[in-house]
Length: 143
Image (tube, rainbow, N blue to C red; front, side, top):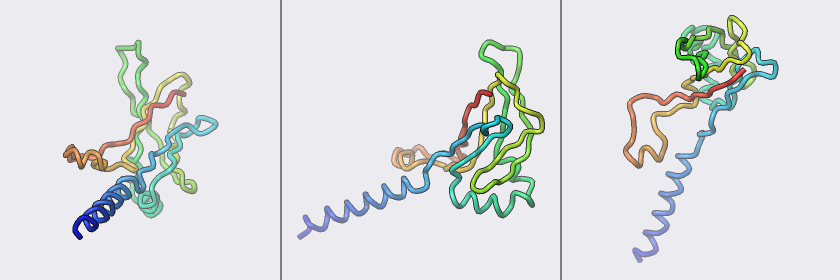
């Protein structure tokens, strides 16, 4: 009798763990707009979109959800990363970063955000590799 109970129970537990691990883990899409005047962040999870819609115009802390840094060229050891200031706005389900000054053609930019981030993935939890800080999402873009 126990032979038949064990397998379905294990299968159900596996399915529950697997479904929890893959739910809403769609990676963000970060890239330049078609005219390269803005950075567009797509595929934000529903909880994040709700919070952004509720607070982006009223809470200045939400303007720091996306950080953009101009990175030095590989062969340039004298320059440093420069934070690119700008304003965030929401257009439909996309978050737009509009810089205060235009992006420079030929330069590389590091975009960092905590949107859709998590403390650890299911694999990290199983391996007991859970950190105490959120792991930000990063994307390098070349203008």
